Structure formats: structure tokens, C-alpha cells
Figure (cartoon, rainbow, N blue to C red):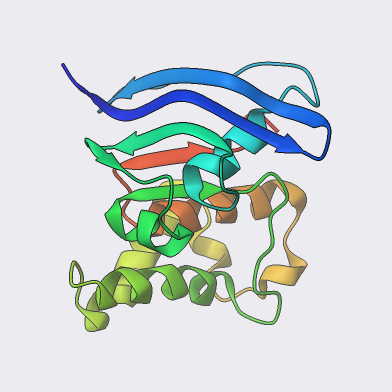
Length: 170
């Protein structure tokens, strides 16, 4: 079985500090893969390189057989990579439902969802994640646990083939 994600020899430096040194991993479609290490070991840096938030200095990142190291983050999202963030950053003035409609409309504009379906799809995701009763609540009034759930729901709303959750156990 070929890898959905293949990271080969990826390095990332910040000045004289080496955050990643020739990291290689393969993740198959449908596989659950956990990256465990102490604070400062490069976990989030690797996630940022895979998702396109940072450019890797060397090595290769392939998704579904295609080299993506030089692609912008939004192009990686369009190809099927989504991630949640260690620190949730909701649109605070928007409701929980509206926070999900944003990525759903992005997916709709890429042709895999009709705009008219976004509200129903958002509610289905909120139901699955246990936040349906908070749909009309402003996101800036959620608890930290609810914010983490909403962050995961927003990543799921992008309909990813690869979902990366930073600090999933937090």
C-alpha cells in the first residue's frame, strides 16, 4: 500500500537552531498516526511544514504521490490536507455555526459541495462533535474544551483526506 503522506528527510532551521533534522515518516490512507515527544521537539514545526504554514528547508513532502513542499497552504487544503491548531483561533464575533460555514464555503467554492448545503453540513458536524446545542452561541463565549471541539469541527468541515490535529490530547 502506498503512503497518502510521505515525508522524506525534512529539515527546518530557525537561524542556528535546528527544529527538524531529516525527519521521515509515511502515513497510509485510513491510518491513525501519533507523533509524541517533549515540548520543543519539533512536532508543531513538522505539522506546520506539512500543512504549508512553514516552508521546509530541505527534504520532500509528498501527498498522494505529488510533491507539495512548494505549494501554498490553501493549495494543500484544496488537495485534502486540513489541520487543527494547538491554540484555537475562532472568529470570535461569529457563532459556532458561522465558524464552520467559513471552511464549508471554501470547500463549496472548490466544487465538492453546494453552497446551499453548507448550513445542514455544518449542523451535522456540530452534532457529531457534540456542539449542536451551541450552534448559535458566539464562539468567544465557549469554554476551552468547547473551543477545542470547534477547532476540530472546523478542520473536519474542510472534508480532508488527511486530518492533522496538533495537541489532540489537550
